[in-house]
Length: 118
Image 1 (cartoon, rainbow, N blue to C red):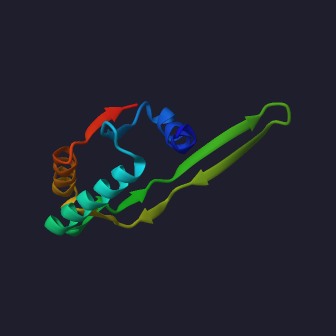
Image 2 (cartoon, rainbow, N blue to C red):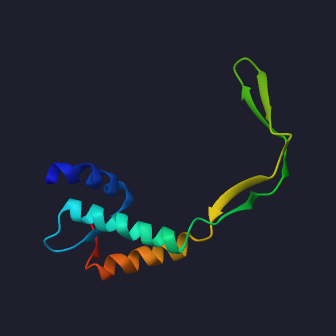
Image 3 (cartoon, helix red, strand yellow):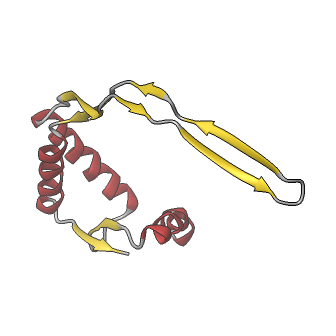
């Protein structure tokens, strides 16, 4: 049992704790079956509704000059970066993600599961 949970535990450690669904006497297979059923219920009631949105508006990236001096050889080296146009950047979000998660959680609670932080 511990060997199956080890990768999950190692993944959770850097995150400061993870939340899992637990049910007294239930097996991993029971969790997978109920999780799948609740996911289906959530997607049936709230199918993906994707929306594109402007994540970063177009802008001019200003020119920046960075210089360093070599006092021993009395030289100065400069590099220039920036000075170009950055177009609009769009991303996509699922507007039904929140309601779908609420349906999933309600379904899991209804089936006798509860969340535990590890």
